[in-house]
Length: 83
Image (tube, rainbow, N blue to C red; front, side):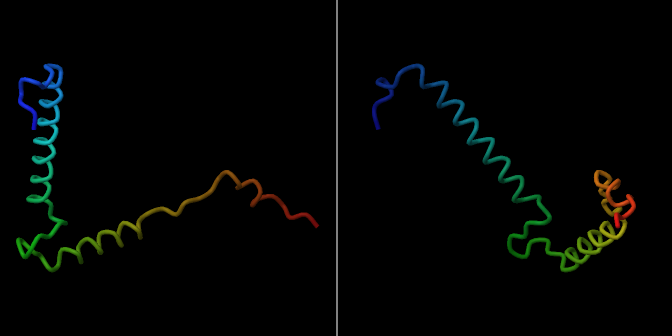
C-alpha cells in the first residue's frame, strides 16, 4: 500500500463517503438480521405456528379479494352474436 503522502487530497472525501456507505450498510444488515421475524437464524425465537397464521391470513385475503373484471372488452362480450 502506498504511503498516505502519495495519495491525492481529492481522494479523501471519496474514502470518507465509501466508509459512511459501508458503515450504514452494515448497520442496516445487522438490524434486519436481528429483528426480522420471517428470517430464522438458528432456534432463536422460533414460533412453529407462525407460518400457519401467515397462510390463514393469505387465504382469507384471497377469499375476500374481488375478482378482476375486464371492462375494456365488455362491449364485445355484451354485443349480440352475429348469425
